[in-house]
Image 1: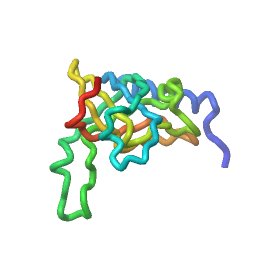
Image 2: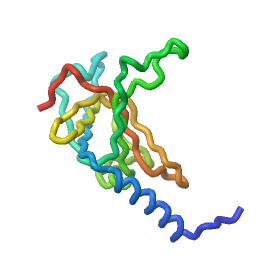
Image 3: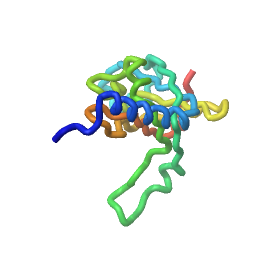
Image 4: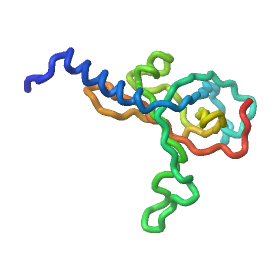
Amino acid sequence: MANLLTPQEEQQIRDGFKDVLDTFSNTPISILVTNDISLQPVPEARDDLKYTTYNFVAYVEYNNGSQNKEDPNFAGTWDNADIRAFVHLDYVQAAGLLVNDYPNISPNSSKLVVDNDGRKEVYRITHISVDGAWKKRQVFMMVRGQREELQQLT
C-alpha cells in the first residue's frame, strides 16, 4: 500500500497535534522521579527517597475521587485515578525521560505535583502510558494518579 502523505505532510499533522495540546496545556506540573529501588513492601511510605524533579505544562483532568468509583455491576473499581495529566512526548523526550518511545517513569514510587492556581496538590503516580497513535511514536504521555493524603513534600 502506498503512503498517501509525504513526510512533510506527516510532520505537519504531528505539529498540529502538538499545537492543539499546547493550546489547552496550561497547568504547571512537576513529576518527581526516584531511581531508588527498595525491597520494602510499601516504598511510598518511606521518607528518605531522593527525587529528581521534572517540570512540565500539562492538560489536566480531575475525577471525583476514588471513593465513589466502585460499582457493584463491575468486578472492583473501574477507574480509581483522581487525576489525569497529558504532556506532549516532545517535552518528555527533551527532559531525557523517553526510552524506546516510552516514558521512563516508575509508577507508585514517583509523585505528581500539580500547581492548581498556587495551591500545590500531591499525587502518587499510579499509571504512565502513551497515547495519540501516529505512526510508530505516540503523541502524548498520560499520567494518572491518586491524591496523597498523608505525606507532605518539602
